[in-house]
Amino acid sequence: MKRGFVKTENFKRLAEAQKMVEQRGAREASLVLVQGHYGIGKSELTERWAADSGWVFVRAKSTWTKRAMLDELAERMGLAKTGRNTEVQSRIIGKLAVEMVPMIIDEADFLVGSTASLLELIRDITDLTGTMCFLVGMEHFPMKVARFGHIASRVAKVVELKPISLADVKATVAAKAEIQIADEVLPEMLRQAEGRMRLLLNAIANIEAWADANGWDKVTLDHIKGRPLCPEFTGKQLGRKHGGAQ
Image (cartoon, rainbow, N blue to C red; front, side):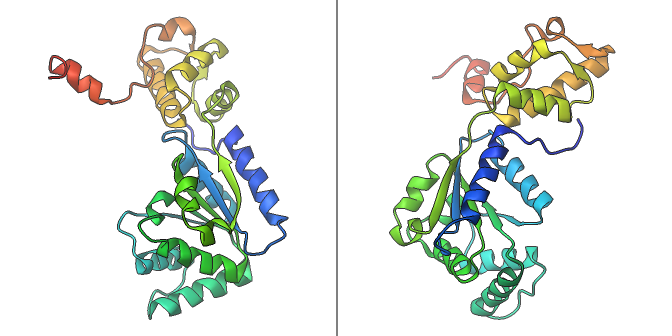
């Protein structure tokens, strides 16, 4: 499979949110909440977008403390991690205030716990710099943030990423597949991927492997008829293997 970034319809939704926040009135309203079901490609999309744009991208961890988050942000920005929390935070604020580079924090559900301490740390950074911060989480992530009014008031936009479309499948196959896949195959790929980019990429990889093994120059619907293109592990499979649920 070829390397490359596919500008899907979800990418367009993020780009539109960026433009809207850049034109905002209140400087402190710089947070964008990105929500979406698992597997639709949130992480790959936002990480590649950050890399192409020169933005700061980090992935939140379940073990994050304030210090762990500051250290990871500082490392991504090429800053020293020595000193107290306030010193590391000041370096981050100083760099962002000058360069105005947006941040993207993936797996942002880990930022929301019994308190909003990690979100408050992000709020302090964005309030003082005016830089945008995209917080990427699962479909219920905005509801978790809404529990904390002083953070929710900084949210400029909520972006819901949607399952991939047939147009996305066509664009992804054109950008990623190393063999020719007929247009008639694309609806079946979309059906089996169930709207999830992760499964679509698995389907492309499997089709490429079959084409290579069988010497196919172009894959048609007849080639893949009856084949599972992107089987996904589920607990139901274990039940079938062991004679059903007990």
